[in-house]
Image 1 (tube, rainbow, N blue to C red):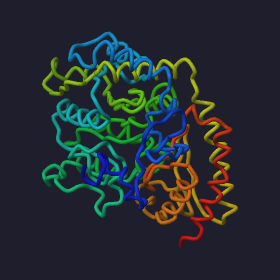
Image 2: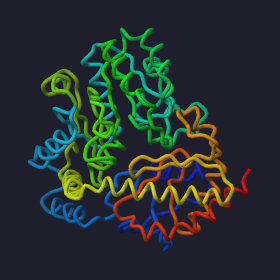
Image 3: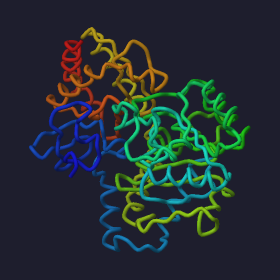
Image 4: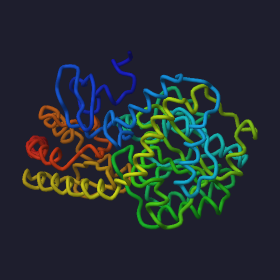
Length: 417
């Protein structure tokens, strides 16, 4: 395998050292192949809001697999999944299930171009929408450490149709819309950017972007692969409580319960342009895979029943306060923004507002913190440009037990210039 991995961040290039290899996991504990038990704050980069191997999910997987692992024929479970998503997200009228968040975003862009007859897309630096060619421009996540924050192998003709603004910089959006608005098919962004560390939108920023998109006739696409069903039972448009409605929403991660899945939803008049009703082609043998859908439905049913979001947010806030105190004792300046059960660490003197700000973080301090925690049995995402997650399995006793490790880790970070 190139680099010994099947996804780059797993290789630990962002933090150095030898990567871990997993053997099994349960709840909030990840067990490595060499027998270490780690308190996991990566949680498969977001899907596992109920923790590893939740019994509802594993039971649903076993029962579905026993009936057949793939049909390429529509099932009642797919319809239930679509109805669940539609019922939870105000802007969604129709849903297309796919196999990944990358595929959802790729399809959203193609659909926007097909619906508008335009070519250009506006994205925001640091927002990562998967590895489709036209979107891997000034992206975050695993490519944030590259000099150009992009990838080799993307023709210049693809890139020329992708425009880039700075997150939270409305003046950038206004300037681009003024110059290219007549050929702008869509504006795509994470409403809360969580693939480059955590960036929250300034008050009014998303509303202004919504208005600018409508004014020039472009579609607004929310990439909620991370935030969908993470902050509430639904999407960020419900959390912000401002009546903000994108035209299309991309989902993934939590709606698969830890199995590969993605979804695209939005206005019926736009979604009906997808084949077989319309001219925009998208297909997938494993779209709506019965095992993935069963896992996702089990997770969503449990979330809807328990509604753990407020308690998770409170637990995360209390935990982050403990981390901030540990940093203060060590004499380390760190920003730990949080929303819901998501948190991020930036070794800098102010909370960043854009990808450009985040690039000023002291990555060497993060590396020292990461390895100190790992040695103490705490696993953070292996990159300074990722976020951490809590799950319902991270109870207060478990969290409290990790605080001494954090104190030692911040002391290790303090020794790095």
